[in-house]
Length: 340
Image 1 (cartoon, rainbow, N blue to C red):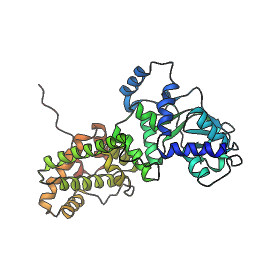
Image 2 (cartoon, rainbow, N blue to C red):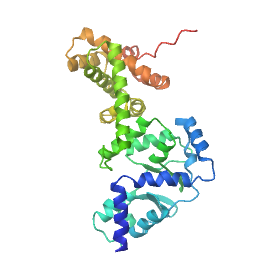
Image 3 (tube, rainbow, N blue to C red):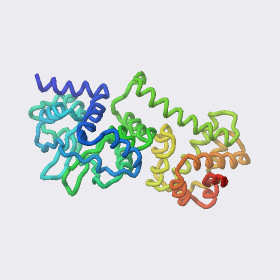
């Protein structure tokens, strides 16, 4: 009976979407109690996207062997107030077992927790990173693989764990970018957060406000009467640029756009699609908005100027480097401010 109760407790926490947050709201802080936490977090925030994952080394990790039982994993998660355990065989990471794995793959299938091995319910061959990797690499992997936790491995030995909650708490990237990971995982069957929750409402409001500001800039730049037309123009141009880029560069470009655009842009076929030209984009704009080619050309230029202003200069230069010459002249950097 205790077995079922333990698993149901984990399932209940997971269904409320609170266990992962509880794990890292407490675990991330408790693991670093010897440091002045506030100053440390401020230093991490200042380092921003260049921060390495050395911060997430941990002196103590819960590690189990593949033949450990589901019951042992459930007890380890409950007793250590964590959300996952690393599975290691002969000194090598072979899997990870999360509270969700136990709830869905064990409890949901009514498996016997005492006799079922975690090898049967774990996520095998998890993606890993070395502690020397940057936080930007962790974020990219979380986006690409739809995961929230990445074990840190040195040689073949696990030495730490970086989680989405850690990156959120440490403000290691723009909120919109981290929110995109959550949105993608909800789409894959992750915990659905109620829109009535205050935190969820704030997240949605921020994402919508960011996109609205972007659309307003396009509308003003192009002199469009309707915001709907400005958004359509933005979506057409952004999608065309993404299609023209290599997959790696497309991911970097998408990451700097409003988070509500991320999902449809990531769903596009991988590029580079060399059929995308200035002429083809103008034709798509004309078709989507019901305008003639004469008006499509300045509209493309206006959207491109807006995008250039809102992405980093380095990213703009990388994108321009992969575009044909007639498009390079459209995606120009914003004019430098005149000397005082």
